[in-house]
Length: 338
Image (cartoon, rainbow, N blue to C red; front, side):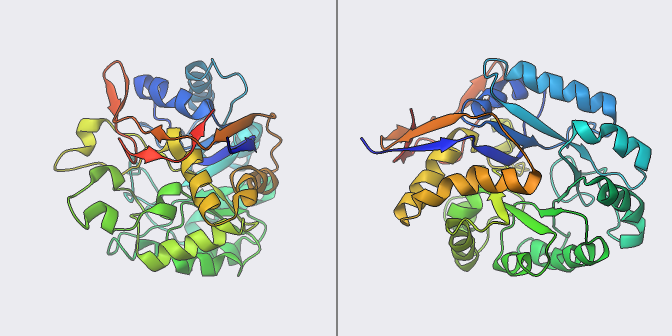
């Protein structure tokens, strides 16, 4: 039986939510990943040390059956964070996450202006303290152009804060890839759904709300460009699932929430993609080694064995009153986790 071993897989962009939803989706990540960078856009968002430590503890409790899992927590960007505050929490966080106002789930308290001078106090403190900046890089323009329109802002940030490590989250366009090597301090995460889907998979036939996300999946040429650079295991790109669970009835409705839930099947889908393209030897670099180097991480050794065996994706994952439909529900994958 064909098999492949990934050691210390890391998900560098993950939504775990809270309460019963956290208890449902947390173990589905901790079972196969050694660690994950967890987003802070709860309601209310994580903006204080007390909230940060409390959330980290709730994550550990939800994933307690997997002691070899590390939640790398983040804090929600504010323009008035003081140097002393950031210095105090530096050892508790892995990054600060910046959301422009209203661009995605729970971003209503995000930054209303991307003017460099408004952002400068917090970003200069982060730069001096060596705290990376993660960014949801979209404007409020036409939905297919939002990431492309945001790229000049990434350039401005990279130029004005050359010592600040900036991660372009869940890039989805070929234009974002072209920007990656232009500045030494720019890095990126890529999701499995942006590697496999296009807008046709959302609205090309019958509407599929479970493939709807932000940034929205794009054109065939964007998907091809992402696949090409990821399959090479480009040293500035790492895996971030952006797995974002929502209640089934909040997806299958007239105001369906944005987010793709893929945590339980991400590694299997990546194995299939890399194997099909003859690049399976690069998979561990993409899902682990690059993140370790970029974020200076030393995760616990956690080998996960993938085997060439059919796996039928469940139609729903449930815990108490929470129900979440995964990406590719009811479909058969070529790889399974042993």
